[in-house]
Amino acid sequence: MRDRLTGPKLGQIVVVLVILTGAFVYKTYKDPENSNNSDNANVELCDISHEKCTLKQGDLSAIGQLSAEKLQPESAFTLSVSFSDPDTKVLKSRLEGQSMYMGTLPALLKQTAPDQWQGQAMVGACSERQMVWAWVLDVEQGGETQQFTFFFEVRR
Image (cartoon, rainbow, N blue to C red; front, side, top):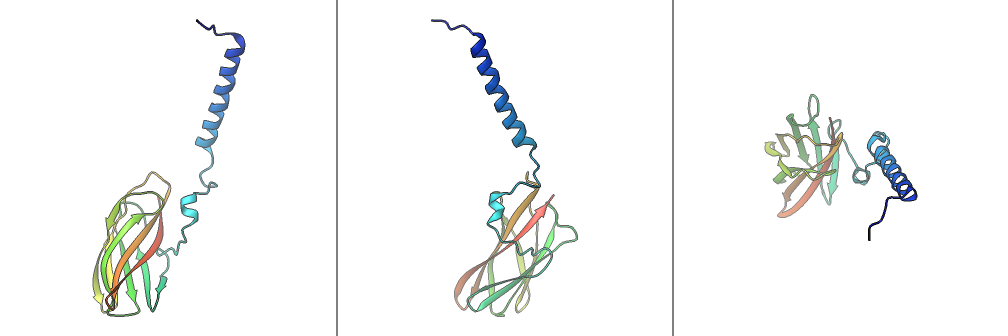
């Protein structure tokens, strides 16, 4: 049986189309500065790009800092960390996207003093205006492995 497109059916189609178009326009052009990103809301930023950040686990503390002329994607920056115990060794150092999965990027560090480690790294460009990254350090102290995670934000 063939149904005809009648006036009331056409009216329903137009109303649904207007509602969907309105929702699309609202979500697309909503002010991104006022929106809260739920992924970033639960991350406490210590902002290692502007100041030293101290993390403590047990009797070991780590002080991390990021140095860059201008922190932006695809530009090298310097990472440095110092530990309260000079016998602490960095086993693995990497950058991971916190706001969005961007894979794991290496952050190679070299020991510059008994308790100091320093190296360079770079983060990739993201489609988001601002991206929260995690600098994850696996360290060994006294035969035990611990993990320190410093967060920082990169804006484009």
